Length: 458
Image 1 (tube, rainbow, N blue to C red):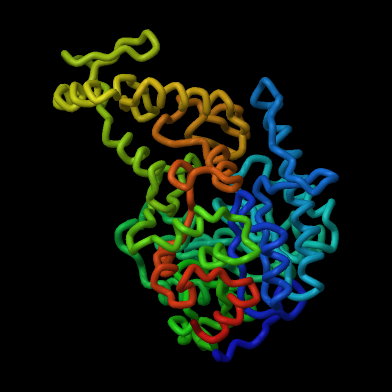
Image 2 (image 1 turned 135 degrees about the horizontal axis):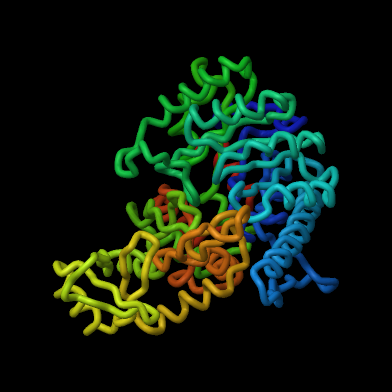
């Protein structure tokens, strides 16, 4: 057994083991409560979570609004109801043990309103709010009003420094910890900056040491750093525990906590995860958020990557022309043979991108893209795919057909959708399900069994 002592998180002692938040409806009140019941820090997703009717059946998120604004309001109501429902389930399931946290994306639509209303409706159920995918400057002020701790997710010391100087220093009493999410190893959306090379991972120890130096500079020596991304066996991270240079640390398990008895994911997802090999998780910039993200390379991702390849620049004059919604466009002549081949293979419908290029899709793909864009629910504060912008209504540019509706895909995979045709976020260690003897013969542990196993170092 590792020497892993409980620490104080969000006002009480718990094991320094965090469940990583996974939306939509993957980290639930049930998984969160089970993790907390085992003595750790459980996390449910507050991103469009499910809520239930009087017969305990999931209420389908059906949108009846004809305008984007009407659908946006419906989405907010669903999100608030779901967040409150999952918080209450987590509290009941935890048996009063551990800690209960809610995970949100700062760039999700109406994030600030949703956090406030869920905290109002789930008083005393939520001990902390974990927030990433953006720079959550107002997070500290919102949670502090409810005496709830906040845990920003950052991928660099520089990001935390900016947050603390601008906002957090006024509310440091409720700073529960800082989640360092390694941008090359973590699943979901990653904080990779434009100055960093996605193909050249940096040393996590050096980045953590730099973050600790910044924390110490702000007199935050006792604030724990929660290490996320690439964590599988704690024996591989033993040098990070009780390390004088890093200070207090904890560990977050995102991908590994998907395969538990309490997890709601379908059996097909179990089979997909346990069949992965190294390199099957890709870091791309396909997400409509504009952030890099890591997901399993399934049919959906392959189709999107192939679409990027069927692309030609728009030029001022050329012998190669296409008609896009009645508008004649000239394309780069060097692509003429490729375009001819694409059209011959059924990719005959050109679609204009905001980068002044044209991509070629099948007529069916084009119609589905346009339909998904028309159905926009404003689930993000700004969306490349639909051009929605929360603050202005429109980003002032055309929608990007090279991306996808993230709301549709995450709802789909969370509720029985095909694992090949929907988005499956995962960390880059997901291939280890197939190599770890703990999962031999299709074994799926309970959360308690998983935490017991983690505490052995393996």
